[in-house]
Amino acid sequence: MQLPRSIGALLVILLAQAFALVPAPAATAEVRKALVFDFDLIDDSQEGEVDGLRTDQTQRLVLISEELRKAIRTDGRYELVDLAPIAADIERLRPIYKCNQCEDDLANRVGAEIVIIGTVQKVSNLILNLNLYVRDAKAGKVVQVMSSDIRGNTDESWIRGVRYVIKNQLFAEKRPGL
Image (tube, rainbow, N blue to C red; front, side, top):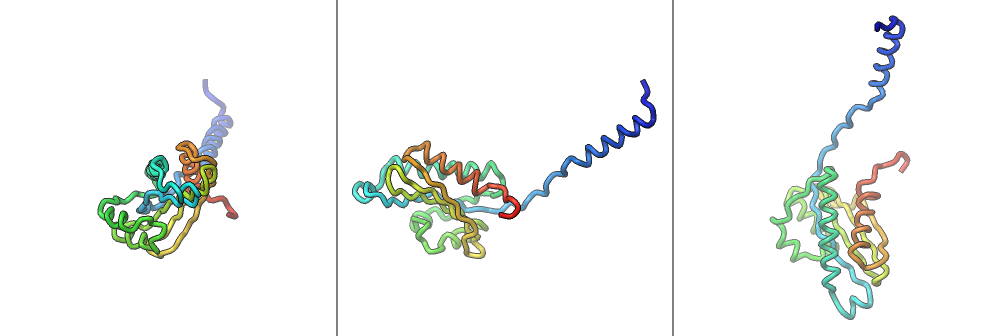
């Protein structure tokens, strides 16, 4: 069955317009090298003052640090640098959030442009706050600060908090006007 010329021409025009509406692939952004430190705990709770460091909280710091790194690897915006060459210095300088910009020097030593520092501040077993700080190691300044309140001192609440920050703040798409 042959279509009349006008219908055939109309189909060609419609197909051409449909293909014109398909967006071109986005230009790939430059992947930046990132140094991601393990989370540190800031325990301001009365329990922390009396009992000291808790094993379950130390394990949660490892859990959310791994969750952050996994998300960064999956997303692809950053390439994680190897911490091994500076591991001894990291341990000596901990907690990193208190080292007065030593994180920039460490990043520069391993070729990282971006530094990501995480903290969990514990006020009580009910009230905690998860924070991420992104620094430009070359410029020596903070470029992004993110935070999420956590209710409850459990593996599930800590994971939920870090996932919220990753999805809604670290990797959130910039909206016009914001």
